[in-house]
Amino acid sequence: MSIYFPTFAAKFKPQNMDTILMNTAYFPPVQYMERVKACDGIIIERHENYGKQSYRNRCDIMTANGVMTLSVPVSKGDAPKTLVKDIRIDYSVNWQKLHFKGIESAYKNSPFYDYYVDDLLPFFMRKEKYLLDLNTRALHKLLELLRLPRPVLLSDDYLPSPPDILDLRDTIHPKPSRRRGEAPLLARPYHQTFADRFPFVPNLSVLDLLFNTGPDAASYL
Image 1 (cartoon, rainbow, N blue to C red):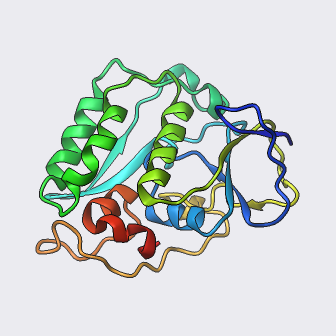
Image 2: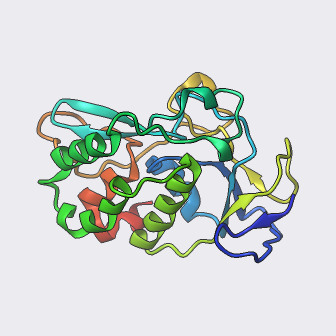
């Protein structure tokens, strides 16, 4: 398997198990980012078949009415036996406006919303053609905001059992029945925006952690 930086042509050859192989994810959950913090480098699998109802195109946020799932629509003709790298985003519905309004409504009164919103706004304005491009750019931005310098690379092939890499594909999934080998996240509670209405909800999108804990988010991970 040859691995390349997404924007540079430099090869990256993992040497130990501190390199992890993950599925792509849309504003990933806290558990995903916890694993990213613990590694030295992350490789995103782009040669797998696209899987529906996963974090590849969805994230969960906490709203005044409880947990809300934000899903990025993809072109119907692309799933389910299309490679992740070829999954196109469907803009027939203005989902970007809906997602941003949902996030704004959920977090505008959180302690660090104003601190981060300008960095995130471009992801709800720029129209990426492919889901993988959107997710990879978002991951780079999240790592920047969390001050976690980690190389993010894309796989150049699919291997069922890649050598010298910690394979975490399909270990973090919204459906417990479809998780592979990863234990559920035992999260230490932090203050959430609607704590007066709902008990703590673990493993929401890392956006929830950022808006509520700000610069302490990386330490929490």
